[in-house]
Length: 311
Ligand code: NAD
Image (cartoon, rainbow, N blue to C red):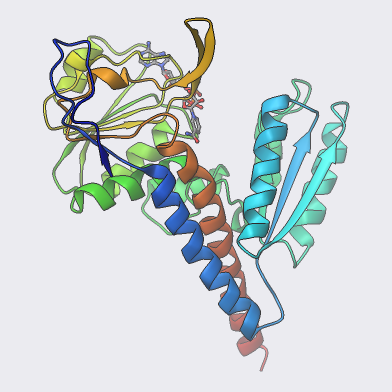
């Protein structure tokens, strides 16, 4: 955990007292634990977890994400299956591939990289994935289970955020958490996870009135909006913990750089904050591997139960 005590802040050059939450180091630890478990599985059985990633088209950002998922999957000792389809792929052909992956016993996790080309119906594709292999946690069955508190595969980004929060704050009981953003992949599951930790949860979105007043009430602020540095220092009460999910590319002083949805330099009075990059981002892929391992373990348990039933 770095502590930028001497950093300059635009708010009157106050010392920057907030701890910086090192998501990169936390994710490295998570991935090392996954690898250790996979190594054990490999040494004791004939199966290892397998993750299939489907990329349709050649969106440059998606291509980079998919390559890094393949690298990390292999580094964890899992099988990586990559399916690259042309941008002209039909809905039927994509659904056929998903069906094949659902039926393939060597595939324990399926991830269809989003966004899909505009002629494809992403919702229908996600709903076609076997919920037991839905390591992105986007299937309606997993979203529903999360909402009612049943065991589910949980979307990777909010899962990473809750891991960082629990590591930092230990017990979240009774804390007031404000989640800014209500997308199905970040904001809504984040709110559900915070509720499961017995937080009092407020979900804000583009139509919320007087957002700064809402966020100033919070002990925990999670921001997933996609607007560069929208959340300012005076929106955050002293001692609050801030999780910045946003990833925005901006041009500053003629240079391209990544910034979050939170004005990082103004957060010196927070208790702790995730930086961008190096905060939430690395956790997402760590949680993808952890979800794939979890899906594998559940598949093994189901197979063992089926064998027992047939004895
Ligand atoms: P989204 O576009 O699906 O949702 C954005 C949400 O922000 C919406 O619910 C909208 O109501 C809300 N919003 C928009 N403008 C607002 C405003 N002015 N005030 C309050 N709320 C407002 O986005 P998303 O997929 O949830 O992603 C959000 C951000 O998180 C993006 O920057 C994205 O790149 C980033 N992201 C990062 C990771 C990661 O791994 N770190 C993963 C997913 C998304």
